[in-house]
Amino acid sequence: MRIRTATAEDAPTLWSIRTNAIRAGCRELYSSEQVAAWTAVTMPIEF
Image 1 (cartoon, one colour):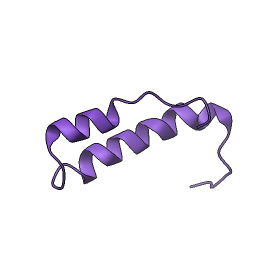
Image 2 (cartoon, rainbow, N blue to C red; image 1 turned 135 degrees about the vertical axis):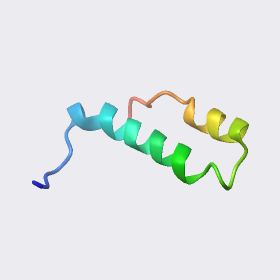
Image 3 (cartoon, helix red, strand yellow; image 1 turned 180 degrees about the horizontal axis):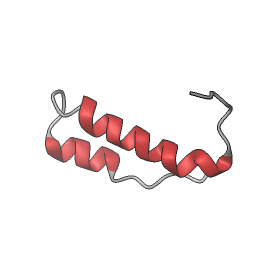
Image 4 (cartoon, rainbow, N blue to C red; image 1 turned 30 degrees about the vertical axis):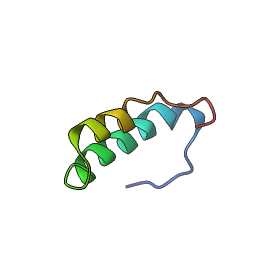
């Protein structure tokens, strides 16, 4: 595996990884409604 600094082009993929991690890791701690609301947010331009 090659490790490198992320670029602006990587942002959508990284946002997807973040969203999937929240959905997988938080489903035992939060209600499905809370997880859905948390992950329904679109990627901010600053990301």
